[in-house]
Length: 193
Figure 1 (cartoon, rainbow, N blue to C red):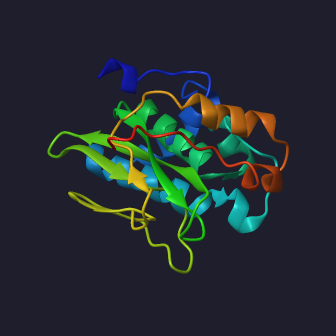
Figure 2 (spheres, one colour; figure 1 turned 30 degrees about the vertical axis):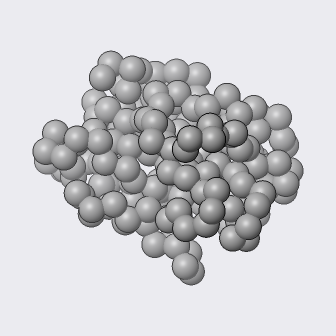
Figure 3 (cartoon, one colour; figure 1 turned 120 degrees about the vertical axis):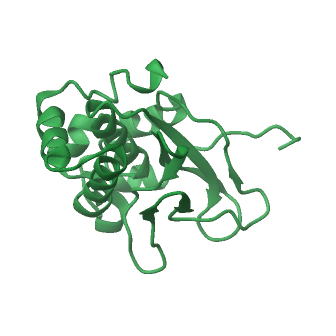
């Protein structure tokens, strides 16, 4: 479980701004479930999704997402993991492989898993709600932003402690939100999936 509490280059929870925000979110909350809910709702509702709002700069590091108030789903998941870990709550990164227009091409969508004592690993999606998207924190029930519904789409079952390299490469190589949108990361899946 230690790997899901570690600070890293992109989940830089020891950053003073992250620590300050994590303390604000945990203040007055009792128990990991309540703290996790406040962290989730903060990232979902207060950090703008880069594409939805056409915002720059492109962020990847959790502290940059917090500082600029914007990020793609992947970057928002880095911030949520950082806020949870700063509060001593194990958090990982999860991905779905989805289409944007109900047909190929495919791209990854980033979300989180949080470890809650009474439930175990519980997936949450702080992408940001909008018309047709309503992600909620209602453990033990999952209510993610997107469901897998088209041929070739998958919920990837792994929980990662660090972001996938294709995600980091996309977010660090491209300079504005349109470039990211035109080059969204994807992974090849084994034929048995």
